[in-house]
Length: 263
Image (tube, rainbow, N blue to C red; front, side, top):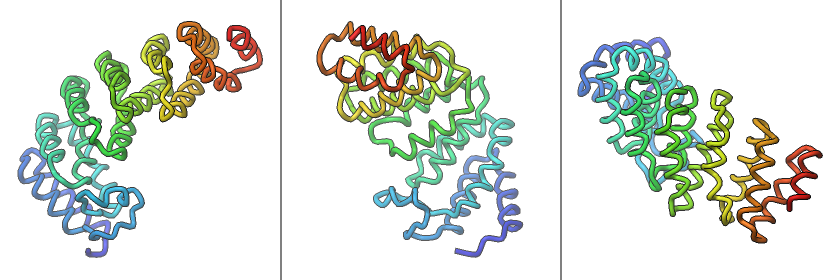
């Protein structure tokens, strides 16, 4: 791999983006750039060590960062071309093109929300790598029209109700991100989503469910206390009550006493 000279890299990327409206030329140029800067199969990047059984270029972070600095403006300016590039990038076997595809998807305009949702639905499955899923959530943080959409909630609900523990855990992760977003203020919707998970909390989920309760308390302690109490009343079994008791220390003294009396 050649030493990275920032000015030269910037010139290479500037030339690459002149082909943004020609999908094949852009993809070929991008893959050639990745091959040029590939560091081989002994990754020093910690996150790449998770992908020992997958293809990757092992690109230095400065190259990825410089690429991403150009992505938003071109994706916003040329959304039709971006859609074609996104699809082709995701089909590549290596991890890095998929990361670029995710980043571009997050920059598409609100008018293409249906395209965004359909791709998220197709991309996220039990086989999706945890790192890619985390990156999807991270890139989506700033896309409020998607996060606040009914389609996103329906997708999360599908994950929550999945028979796969792994997919359900991803649903919990997405819910926690939603609760942390102060722009989302319909907490009853969150309580409705997570309610079925408390019927019989799976051991693998308890840590993540506790995290959601903690986050919900920061948004509305009264509503969260009411949720814990109603959950214990509806699912009146020892396992659920034990889990509800585990949540008590996270509340203020006033609500601790209320929950204890209800239990």
